[in-house]
Image 1 (spheres, rainbow, N blue to C red):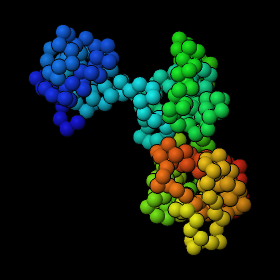
Image 2 (image 1 turned 60 degrees about the vertical axis):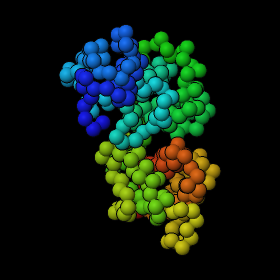
Image 3 (image 1 turned 120 degrees about the vertical axis):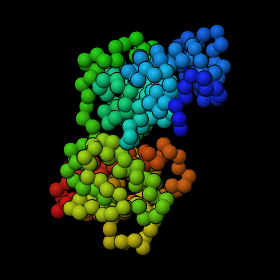
Image 4 (image 1 turned 60 degrees about the horizontal axis):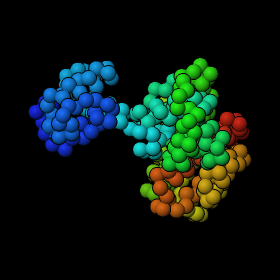
Length: 299
């Protein structure tokens, strides 16, 4: 949004605002969605701002617009997963409330998809025999919706539901340096996702992209079997998906090597969820190896 939308403005942007206000139950008067920012729309914007603790100026600037978008996300509208900046919105709050009510604790439903929410999603997925990747996509949302009769009327903030489990090896990420080096442009996305996931889990994570780690572990991401790069290093393939990738990374690091080459095959054909699952699998394996055998890996 380049400039605030205010009283007297007209057009598609005003219609979008009106549709969102209407979806939230605000009264727009007899004219409804007409693309004109006047009386009832102005009053509705001010009520929305008051409800959300925003400056009550009746204009839709960036802050009000962001709050409107957040408030109108429905569970299933988009892919939800751990990243930084954190995803946030009404859909995340519904997800958190449902998980808490079902016994998969993610803490206070604050509408922010953080590390504890990811952990709760993974526990729920494992419980229903789905791949535990922490990504709330179509299949996971459908499974939650099928259980709506169980969680819909329960208190999402019950004390028993708020005993959260620890997040992914946060202490290890803050303690041991990890370097992620993409060997070409096709693997750079996964490298960035691994680092982003680490910082979303632990803001003080010692993870860097583009250079080897000093006194830590370095992952070289190769676009398939790059046999001419550092042939002396242990190398693994990611064929077979995350379930196969994680133990392979774990085994390679557990041998005592501080450097590993990971062959990422077929990246161009992978979707966003696939790339994120791959990043999750690699980071989880690194955390598992360093938590269990960190001293051996680092000599």
